[in-house]
Image (cartoon, rainbow, N blue to C red; front, side, top):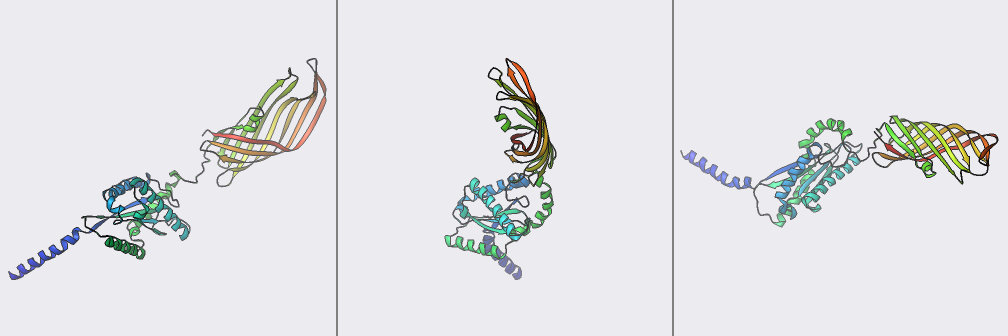
Length: 353
């Protein structure tokens, strides 16, 4: 009987001593934000990041006073291992951690000094934010808060991947799925060339009062077929002066480079003209072709500017004439060959689909 009384007394004493300590312990709350491999952009609605962000903001709001006075820092760990080197992994991890901190600073109205940040070239493609939420509010002096901060920094420096190991295996399992969805995720550098048909208008032709329109069919990102046509008919000085022509110019293009912006092509040109800018007019046919080169400057998702130049050969077979008493009088035939620039354009491209 005496042993039972002694054991019960000892048990009650232990409960009296340990229960207040247990009640003052803190519960770690860790939120994990996923990132696209090799990317530093923080996409809030992606992979459940919006849910984690809402949960973290609620924790911060419930402990905001303690966070702002420096007694409860937010522990931020950035991770990256999808780059080609450790230096690039650490740089990307730093960018990711800063993006998450910026989001919290804006939304939760906290400051940079409320964070303790570490970056790691290991584990996976994510950022963890850990908040040690107190279970029971206890009085903490400034000296104790500073000692706690230093102890936490020392612990993280000695054991840098503790938070990452909790989710490391899960992040590794999801890496393949993340890479498969990368094509559907917004990207900072992705250039779209997946259109099939576009309308074209050579602005240099329009500047000379020669309307010009065309189409281009992109068979694939590297190959395209374009056709441009021009037509105009002007007369003045009681029809004594004349400027009229029409042209059709089909072209095959090969687009080069990662962005498919530079290209080389082959052009054929045919048409008719009627020029009378002096006493003698010239009316006839032209035909030729050559090599083209150019660059397409992307303005937005549907518009681009096409800068191009064509070099080659043109043949013009025409007759000369004069107008006497409103009667056209023929003055002979002539043929001319031209080697050099045969086409130039600053073309506005409108991608239809």
